Length: 249
Image (tube, rainbow, N blue to C red; front, side, top):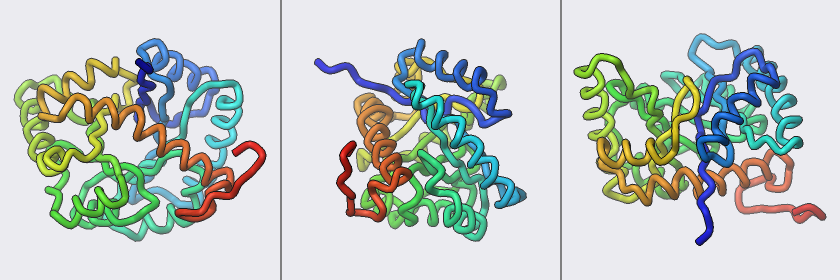
């Protein structure tokens, strides 16, 4: 039986772009059983688009070098914004720099936009914050094959009462997604990678997600999305549904 290749889509944050620090994140993830992992650059309502773009260009250069050296470390752009304006401005300029693009579901507007915009790969639910998903959101998520994510660090709290409330909110938020057997991602979060099977078991027990769906989301499905997005970055897949044949493709 072929062994699954797991990917942690949130193994740390883009910091000072020190290659040794980035290699350390990858090494930790690899030792835990991940084939690759993504570092996250967060764009907020207060972020300057020009500065964010330059930071991403620098991160892209560093990660391209590391990837050439067989470090499967990916760049994820994470929009932590309340409305569409900032998201649209950023995506129009910087989407091709990102291996993955995601939006945090902070408001109804951000959830609706994340569900409908093809440039977004992942909708991140924030336990205790994200509004509920509507039927229309679910239909678009299914049609565009998006992944719905809950990072473990977003749920964790040292206070047992707060922790349990976050779990219950996340469980309620995911009910319709789970019922439709849509892809559910559990990732580590900004504090470094956590053992993948421990994450899957935790999500199965507390969130009611199917273990096989969690495994497929963190392996086959995210690997497929990463491959397609890399082809877009390289110009092999210029628009949806069109693939340019090359000697390497």
